Image (cartoon, rainbow, N blue to C red; front, side):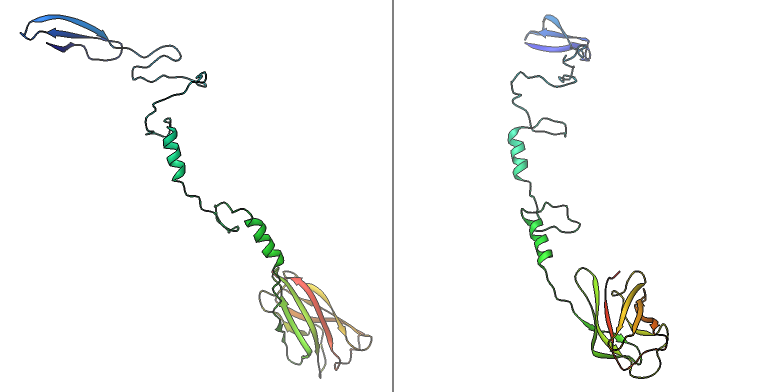
Length: 232
């Protein structure tokens, strides 16, 4: 005996006919099967077996079981598959903050980095000022810069001979040790009652100006240099 599909297309909402044939070739009869259509109400099954719905799925404390392995990003996932996925994830961390890194920082890494920064006390490296013609260091005339970018100038210079002019350049600071704007500085005559004023410009020139008294000063004595400013 056999059953053959003898009519219909199998389309949802239509009827197909099946014929029963005996082993001797005679027809024993036929029957029809209605092919289910898409459900019309909320929660009704569609012809492909899915259930369209909106809102939350109320399970009343029951579980969805026998879920197959997910194939699409919207598929339900088995707990065993989820556990395997979590175990295969490798998380890369940084011991301390790294510029441009998106990795999480290990516990204590930020504190360690800040502590190292605060406790770091690198001594300033001092360099001899690039004195211009006629100026000589008195013991020393130096400049340096700390880790935060603050430039320091210290020491004294002498001008053994000749006549100093207004805007005379004492020394020139190199790039990286220059201010971002004009900085006035006091230049103290180390003997007598004279005060000499000056400034440091953005080109690094340490200049004399406003010599007082107007009749000059004894060039044999030292001019004390002292300044602190942020380099640009």
